[in-house]
Image 1 (cartoon, helix red, strand yellow):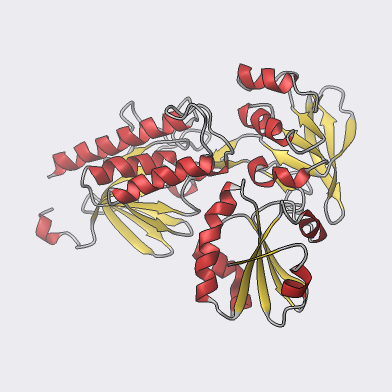
Image 2: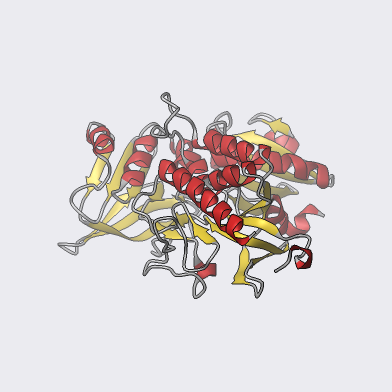
Length: 315
Length: 104
């Protein structure tokens, strides 16, 4: 439509999510002089803000704390003029008759000609009895946040991937003993993490086992696990349980609007175009094969450049 | 925001005449560093409540006494009792909503 008919507050791009993907998209979009708003329902940084030390992001040979890295990305996006808004969540996302998009939040509706979806993922809950009851009293998804409160204690880590092993290793700095509970009889984590794990005498492996319930009084006292082969139940005396059993994409608000795969991840073509024109996706919630910061920032850059091209063609 | 210690926790928090909000935090905790500035701002917004912070590394006994096993944990005290318990970092609007009438 002609420019004079457009609402004054019409943005060039709305970026949903301020993790590494969304912040990188924000850096590129704002630096490209696009009117850019980044919406974040928690606090900027996404999953990496919970990471103690990021060792594999290029440019930081000595490693960098996830919090520091996300703060730097945030500063960089703000410095180029991106507007970062904290919201409690996206209530709805919908195409508008003029070809643009409306994102409804608790702080009102935001309108833009294009959208970059970078909503990220969150830790999957196990759903076992006791998990919800003991949040803050021994159940955690963040070893970096809570590990040091387990000095001299015993904890269980549930999972066998990179997160489980790396966070388990972090916990050995404080805890006397770390049970690693995994439903298979081998780990999926990267070799280097596995080597460190197997060399650490504080680990005890509970193979072929799944968590069944968490028991305790005021605080967690034990994790009951079941061997999937023998069906035998075992009670591990622990003060804390840390879950690393996978992630769920934060894409509930996109259901029925943008194409998602069976697990809820956003489907795109190779240039990150979703099923809607002018809507792009990047980062962990995108159906990509690698959930890493380097991947997220690469995709964030590409999504922003694609949005810019899309807007150029509209003009 | 004033820092309280193991030694003055009783005098400054438990025996305080008004409402006190305690931020259990630590240097190494990313989410704690995120919520720190939010609480500093709220301390200015809500003068009726005393906002203090307690470093759990320096005061493990206090953390244990109040069963703090995750940080950041925010405990809202009145008359020496815990009236509310909030676990995890969140933006200001959400935190204010969770704390609700305690802030008045």
